[in-house]
Image (cartoon, rainbow, N blue to C red):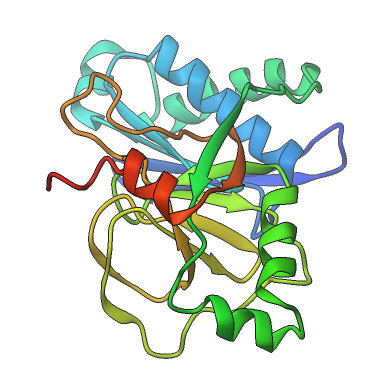
Length: 246
């Protein structure tokens, strides 16, 4: 069960079966804003108008996993060859419509305050021959796109980090990274939404709760969002710290 389609944009995607209840649309191993926009658009269309038997869709950088109930689809669609073929055709129809829409949406920029005091801040600056002030200036100048969420609830993978500060993950991950920690891993930057083991290079911490299960929308960031980091002082951090009572 494998289909390869060449798009108008000259980029190819594959549709494959992950298992008997899941399908994967993949444009390959790539970080590309236009491709990510197509993935998010496909995810949104499936979510807004799910087919009978659909469970959920999960977007990543350049792929989308679609989970479905094979039995329900076969019960509702008696003239199909397989549940996979039915879902594949639905996905192909949506992709054809999405291909016509080439504009990349510019969402409202979300400002994330950061107190730059991370355990790895000095090491990352030294590695690149920069002062701490220069590193902070570079990290706060860019506007980052949330390409996907995963790993932890609300953990947003953002890019692209300026090559002057792009830094590989730590060889030995920490057993516990505090919630709110802002880190760099390769060309990505992200925020730990909860206390967790992790190997990203920690450069600071935000006082904002990135994941709050008491809210209707527990995740502050979602795929497609635009994010800009703003440097704040220790005093400002302590005044705004949403984690202080936990």
